[in-house]
Structure formats: structure tokens, C-alpha cells
Amino acid sequence: AFLVISVAVATFAATYRATLERGQREQAAFALGADIVLREDLRRLVPVREVATERRLAGLGDDVDAAPVIRQVANVAGVGTLSAITLLGLEPKLLETLRGSSFDAPDLAFPSELRGPRLPPSARELELGGRSSVAGLSLGVALRQPDGAYEQIELSVPGRAAIPRAARGGTLLGFQLLPPPRLREAGADAGRPLVAEIELEPLRAGGAVVSGYADWVGIGGASFARGRLGVTVTPGIETWFRPRQAIDTMSLPAVVSPLLARLADDSGRLTLQVGGRPVRLEVAGVATRFPSARNDFAVVDRAALDSAMNLAAPGSGFATEAWLDATTPAAETTVRSRLRRAPFDALVLDSRVEREARLRGDPLARGALAMLLVGAAISLLLALLALALAALSDLRDDRRELLDLETQGAAPRLLRRLIRLRQLGAGTLGLVGGLLTGAVLAALVVDVVAVSATGERPVPPLELSLDPIAVVAVVGGVGLIGALVIVATTRGAFRARAAGRPAREDP
Image 1 (cartoon, one colour):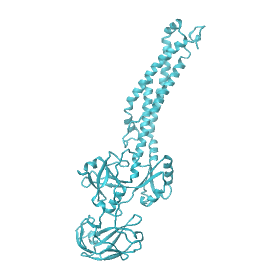
Image 2 (tube, rainbow, N blue to C red):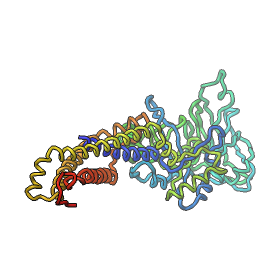
Image 3 (tube, one colour):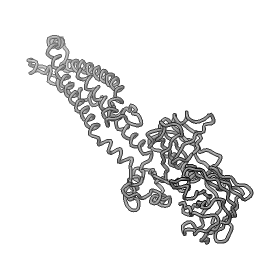
Image 4 (cartoon, one colour):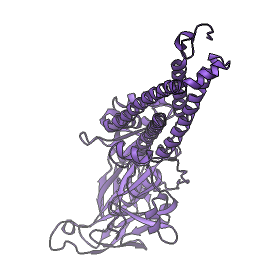
């Protein structure tokens, strides 16, 4: 019985340890989705996009895949229970090396580059001719700078405005209709829609025509015909007049959670609200869970999400994190050390390796494992003692029969072998029984680890993990030590002095 218990407890401890270590690896990887994640330090408030630029990330080396990531909180309009949806914009290479998941993501790439007329690099002033039927109505000229940042220049109709140095040579993305101050501020006219008509002449930069409006569209209450822009500016609704974009009539392919997939229409389309602005998605795949997302989620191509957000509100789509995956453990250690130095030290570094180390050092998990190992060791000692006592008991209880066999000519070596085989047979049955009992207990390992590891249910859920080498080592070790104990216990049996006989001694 002691042997059965010792083998069962040792097998359970080995399975517990393997399951615990696998769970710790998977939890650390799932929490981040990458080997290393850089985020904004709320004490310093230095934006990720200013530190982890694409040029700097590319300079980390060929053995590191690094890219900016967009993470936003979204909701579904009219569904109050879905107010904390994780919207992730990831690069294709990060999906290929995604940590913490074996999900085979579909191709989410999307032709979403925002286009528009370019300003002459030498131009220092914008000029817009025309006439507005409402005094005080102005236009916010949205520009994408050559460095990828966004700028908005307020321009009256007619009017002139200086072009900031960083925006020279940038791309014109359109005009936002800005109501007069009396409608923006609380007052008698606040909340009322503004109806106006604007005669628009082509926009000029440095005296040169930047663009006409043949391929422009009105958004949120604007329409253009025969050189006249009719607008209805309503508080809470952004009104735009801008170049037509490919993304206007298309939805972003997305991998979504099951609940979001059920909310999609018959064509698989779903609209999320990000900062009060719509982002249209098309379900391309469904996943039960996704790394770094605890709640419902939608995962899209980063460039596509960047364009969709900046089209709705220039400057709103930007990287909030940077993810890095190393090709080797040595490369991960090297890049982690490098990221702790300037300029990256202005950001918070979250490491999969360090998270796993913290999980391994959890006192509750370590204490539970130590208790199992101590219990297995005590059970093994008791089992070995039981084997020795059983062998001695056989020698005592069966002494008369054994002496009769010796009298009939059986050699002492044969008699010792008989006792040993009998004990080894019993020990073998104990090993088999211990393995079977351990297999039954293994069914409880996942629940025991889930409760004892960190005190809460892990994500992703634990899966039973067996360590064949450890199990073989346990069985082989117990069997070998048990055999040695039996041999040592019976070594002095049936020798001349011990048996009280003179003459024949068999070594």
C-alpha cells in the first residue's frame, strides 16, 4: 500500500509540475501576445509613437520582429453591455509570430493608404477664395505631414493661413466644417444646426493650385455641386468635405470574438464605435480568445485601422504600443537589455520572460509543489521501509518451509532468490498500482493547479501536461531503489552462521 501511495503521489507531483510550468508559460505569453511590449509610462506621458518609431524599431536588428500596434477601446452602439471591446491593429508579421496562441489568422491586409493632393514643399501659405453665407464659418484644413503626423490649419472663407514648417510638402486630406464660436460654446444658439452655403474656389498653396473638387465627397451633412458646398453642421456630428478614398465603401477584415460575430449582419459586417466615430468591420475569422485581450475583441490590420481612424478624425489613429518578437532566447535577452536604455527607457517595458519568472516565483504555487514533493519523498521512504519489513517477515514466517527446501538440497542462493522474486513481484504490483492510481489522480491535476497556482482561474485555461521523462524516472528510480533494498535485506539469509549450520556456505 505504501508503494502504491508513494508512486501515485510522485506521479501526481510530476504531472502537477509539468502542468504548472506549461500553464505559466502559456499565461505569460497570452498576457502579452509578444516577447516584449512597450507602452506609455503614465508618469512621464511620452507617447509611444514619438519613441518607438518605425526607424528605431527596425534598427534593433534582423533577429527581432518589431512593429507599432494600435490598441483602442471600442463599443457597439445600442449594446450597453459591450462597452469595453479591445480593438487591436497588428502588423502581418506580428500575427505570424503571435505568442500565446496557435490561431491561424487569415490575411487581414487591406489597401487603405489615404490619398490626396500634395502641397508644394516650398509653399509657406494656404489661400482659399470664395464666399460663405454664414459669417464666422471656417474650415479646418487637415494635412498629413511628410513624417506621418497630422496637422489641422483653420482657414476662413475667403482667407489665408501659414503652413507650419513640418507640414510643408504634406498631403491634403480634406476640410472639416467648423461652426462659428457662438455655436461651439454654450449659449442661446448652442445645439442648433447650422445651414450654410459656401462658394469654394480651388485651394492654393504658395500661389499654385493644390486641388479642385471633382473627386471630393461630403460627409456628415455636406454636399457639393457646381462650385457650391451646401452644409448642415449639427452639434455632435463632424462634417467633412474631402477627397474620395477607397476605404469609404469598404470594411476592414477582422478576427472577432464569438459574441461580436453573432452581432454582425447577414453579410458579416459590424460597426464599432471608437471615440464616438464609426469603424466598419467585416468578419474574416472568429477566435474564442486572443492574446492580450481579456474581453471581447476585434483584430485588424494596423495600417488599415490607422487609415480608418485618421480618415474619421485626422490624428486619432496612432500607435499606442510596440510589440517585439525575438527569433532566439539570446536575441530576446539582448534586445530587452537594449530597450532599458535611452530613448526606449521613457516607456514601460513588459516582458514575457519576466512575467513567466514572476509566475514561477509565486509563493502559493511553489508551496503547493514543495508539499507534494515532500509528501512523495516521505511516502517513498515508508514504501522502502515496508519492502524491507516485508522481506524480513517472509524470512521469519516461512523459515521452516525454506529450511525444509534446503534440507532437500536447495542451495542458499536459490532460497534467497526465491524470497527476492516474491518481494519483487509484490513490488511490481505496487508500481503498477501506483501508476494506475496516479493516472486517476492526474484527472484532478488541472483543477488543483488552477486553484493553487495563483488563487484565480488562469487564462488561457490550463491543459493537462505529462512529463514522460519524469514519470519514467519516478518508476525506474523507485523500482531500482526497491530492488536494492530487497537485495540488501536478504543478503545475509541462509548463510551458515546465520542459519546455525556449519559446513556448506553459498556466497
